[in-house]
Image (cartoon, rainbow, N blue to C red; front, side, top):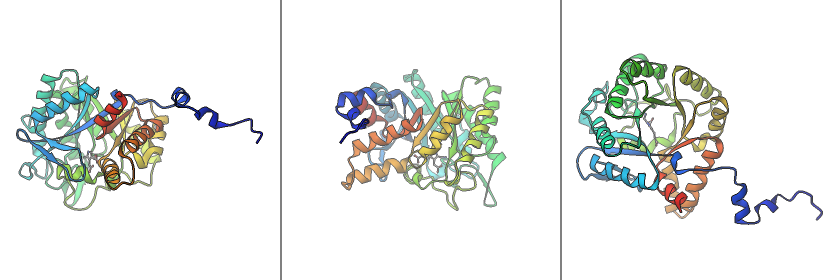
Amino acid sequence: MKLTQRPRRNRRSEALRQMIAETELRVSQLVLPLFLVEGKGQKQAIASMPGIFRLSPDLILEEIGKAAQLGVKTFDLFPALPESKKDSTGTESLNPNGLLPTTLKMIRDKYPDVTLITDVALDPYSSDGHDGVVRDGIIVNDETVEILAKMCVVHAKAGADMVSPSDMMDGRVGAIREMLDSEGFTDTGILSYSVKYASSFYGPFREALDSAPKFGDKKTYQMDFRNSREALREIDLDVAEGADMVMVKPALSYLDVIAKVKAHCNVPVAAYNVSGEYGLIKAGAKAGIIDETRAMVETLYSMRRAGADVIFTYFALPMAEWLNT
Ligand code: PBG
């Protein structure tokens, strides 16, 4: 055959493929989410997330040490609280001596150089399992925002580098920025879950925190998966309100949204490779349907290719090991 163009010529050898690969992924772009539980020596398995555990503060310190050795230096912390510490307004979220703030301080003391991000929403603290205060079956916006802003000050005081509102209330980024500034935390960053969809892929996370909604769903605050123009509206608002970074979540079913958001704004874009995406790869590998490592590598690179600058992933440690060898 007489062909001028033969794209296969560029794929002939591993060396050639390496030379022209368009997408890079660095260990420093990975963020490891960590589930915290009270006590000592606690390492609790999460059935739908093999390889991920709820860890007590002493073991969280060990895990962070291990991760840092691999080059993973950014962590996102989620407390799993007993039902007895939950109420309808999430009072425990403002306790400066609570599980999360005390653990933050311990980490800060032992590892001054790591970056600590905290998730900001009421669900771990809410007896209703919602991200905000519930009144007459409605998740009320403005009252929730006030609590969230106070929660951010608690986290900042305990040593958080960045707070990460995942609640999808309107106006929370602006309120948080104002409250942090007024308390002197002008250097504490805000990584906003700007574009967070009401998704079926959060199931294992809700098992990890025992935080599933007690009634209804989260569709009055999280986004409808059919929309992507609306994502840009959320991004514009959050950036105008002071977000330092924005996030799209989940990642895999929303690569188009990541690409759109990346083209649209000038702040770093994070993608959250969520618990269900992790669990599916694990389960698929166990069932012999896919090769776990190759599927992990391919999916994380696809998020980078779509435009994510930062990736939150439960695969952070195995991916770092892969990248380091
Ligand atoms: C809480 C929160 C959720 C996740 C991160 N923060 C769950 C939810 O909104 O129901 C999901 C993370 C994951 O599935 O890995 N607001």
